[in-house]
Image 1 (tube, rainbow over the protein chains, first blue to last red):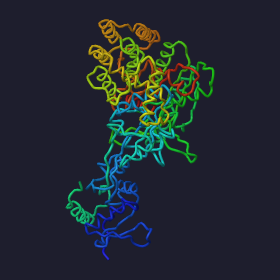
Image 2: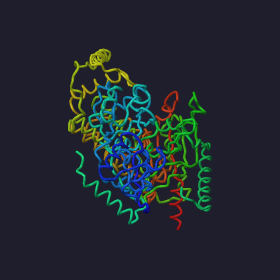
Image 3: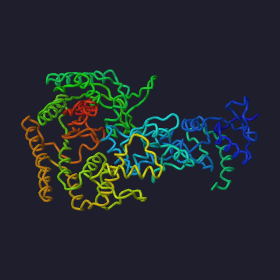
Image 4: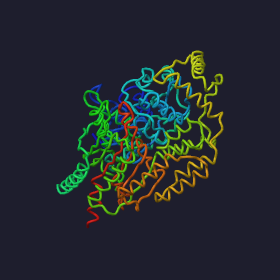
Length: 238
Length: 390
């Protein structure tokens, strides 16, 4: 049995996991769980030197930052949200053509007077007058939101944490507007929300990402190059 | 703060004790507000710049708390606890740690924990006297600490407000300009929009009948009918009235004459004023005369304030007035000042303060409570003073 040289993290559940395993299989890398069916460890049948970790997509982003893993498949949104200085910490090797989701700003459809981000600051000033407080914004994407609005000059809001269904927050009056991910927009409409015209913060999809701070031994670099070559040889999806 | 030597700790304590003696002798009662503060109140009251730098977390009961980013709001809360209904004149001083996130950025990284010593004067009727008292005492304090080589920067948000009020334009444009004063980029964007140079953000095209700006109820009826016809439920906290009101304003904005180039220039010229106070005053007179606008009341107050400072023995020779100064702290409403050491470019100002008449009402006071205060960054002060002695 050969020595493990590199840790590759893949999503541990759902469509994202299925798509990831499918993609690697096409590249001639059959990923199998080792040990217990519900365990979190795996291997690449054809490449014993690769250690596979099954992790949640957000854990993968965290571990890319800390360098506990060398490579990982996760959403660009999570990498940008989790790692403030991501250009120093990780390298995006390739977008993989699945796991599409947009991070967007949405407000109630009934806000007929609001179409763009520029409207929000005005609404915030008016809201302050009527209600004596700032607009509340529900999101899981605290950092993406902060950076986006700082760049676009909207400040009159306060973030309220969101654990469950963010889209429901305006209707149940726990927030006035939201920043969330959407793939088809159906959930938003069902919750009587609309996306602002210039309210797309990020068009995200699954990416193969390399950590810069992982332990890059020459053997690890060799393994990475092998994986990269194969993955980059595939024509870019759409 | 960085791991500090016992020596540094002692030196800071000595400095704080000296300052406190000066302040208590002047009638300021030492108080010690809590370090942990409820997050929502604090975040709602402080400006964006401070908000982004506050440490927020929740406890096991799910309460959102923060480490105080300054002592002004915590001290104001303490005042209101003691004076819930009748807002009596009061003088407090404090000394203690404050906490601010500072992005790691090489040698420019500022400490995330530092001490502030400060003064707050509440509900004093004579506004100018209150301002002079705080200003003078701050200067006395830092001079007593040994700082002799410093510059003073002053500003007056009351002058800005008066200026905008004096220029002929629809009242809601004034409200918007005042609201955006704190964000220079947005302010300039808004000026361009009002002058027609930039297009206002798109209004919904699928129009409803023209709304009559004098008939709010009629407008609300039109909008609610529109919503019903288009199966748009009214959800959330923002009311039909608020939505209608703003639609009316937007319709007016596009219908009305634009803010003239001359007026835009006038506002920008005012904000560019910088220099010794008397020279700045001459420039303001020059601007207002040419534009034929009247800000006499605010101007007189500014002039009287300078005279009063002189009477109190404050030397204004190293003082610069800046019309823009005060933009970074959202709660200030009038006179603002800052004391800078020669290396303040790198380390930040040694002390700063001003009038903040809006804060206590926001925190739950029954009525507007006048307030003036200052905060001294004792670690910076000590660094500068020790540097001077070497």
